[in-house]
Length: 383
Image 1 (tube, rainbow, N blue to C red):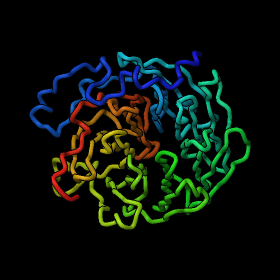
Image 2 (image 1 turned 135 degrees about the horizontal axis):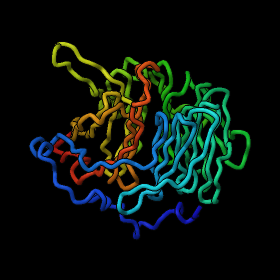
Image 3 (image 1 turned 180 degrees about the vertical axis):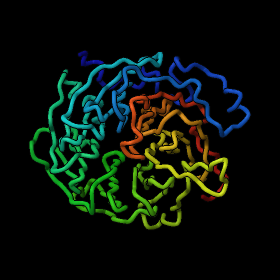
Image 4 (image 1 turned 180 degrees about the horizontal axis):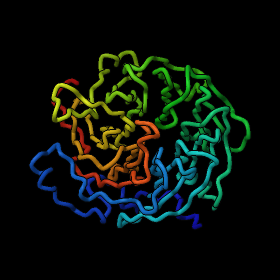
């Protein structure tokens, strides 16, 4: 394995550091006739598939924060890593295995290490920068590890794990035991970090914890989700002032952390369909993934209805909606410059095992983000 493949690349040499264009594979595309006629209708015609996808449901996808690489965690017990070239093609570079389904993955801030958390109650790391070809266990819990996130602490990477055993643990990779832990109200379903400052944890029974990472063993704030049904995902704002919550009931909530901003909180319906033969009812789908654009601060939602949408929270406005992609969307992420949006099309288990079958797709798609797709609306006054 070529160690240099995973070293951070200087911004000056990177062709993916602007949002005005996309990798040359996607081209300077013309809008489709449908999207040209309807400016809020998104175009999927230039989306491309990632080569050699996972063989079972995809639980998480994450771009490297330092280079053009993508990692995916899957129920096939593997975390895979691909490299994206400047033509937009993908090539498998590495993988590491667990003893059970892998439920999450993340990168170290310098892009040299990939972590995964699994149903085998472990978190494992592949040290790409060190030339490792096999994963090593770096964390353990009493129940499956649902979430992993990485931060920098005193110049070294630290792993944060969240488990169905109701604990969040902090791991110095040089030690076998966690350096700290904190017990949450219930099983951890979703976590997200913003920089090295804030951690948001969503648990069963709709509890949400906000942790200031300067005081990692104390909850800065604990609240109940404003949404009435099970939390599926939490995702922090780009500026760290708050977070979004998605539930199984086709709703998204925008929540600010500070008390002075509470009047700006709101929630909205999304990922719902009205049957043509019954206009008085609505089919409701889970919001599986929320990702914030790294530059614009706008965000995506994706769900069990097989669609994704881009939103401007400050204008309370949907920027773009996209057609169904042929299966439920289980995970999403923007790359570091925000000009590629990746989404995983695979079964999300929202209807139980009986609805899973061999023909259900398992694929990761790359959507080229055009200049206007994620830009916020011009501000016209007070929010």
